[in-house]
Image 1 (cartoon, one colour):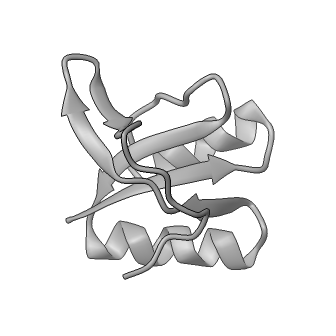
Image 2 (tube, rainbow, N blue to C red):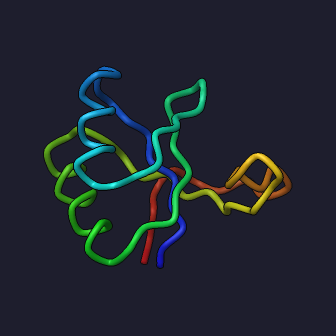
Length: 83
């Protein structure tokens, strides 16, 4: 599993359709980011969406909270996911 932050660069209807297609949780933060754990297969699909300019990966350390995955605000990182 990979713990990632996605920033969706498309409208909400299209985001919802892609979330359903990839079996991702239906939740996006107010700033358009989504924090999820994904499988290798899901990650490959999301990388293809990135190549299509539908989303970008953000390099944020995520932690479990009572409200689900959230960024660790004690760590400031850049805006690129890396393997």
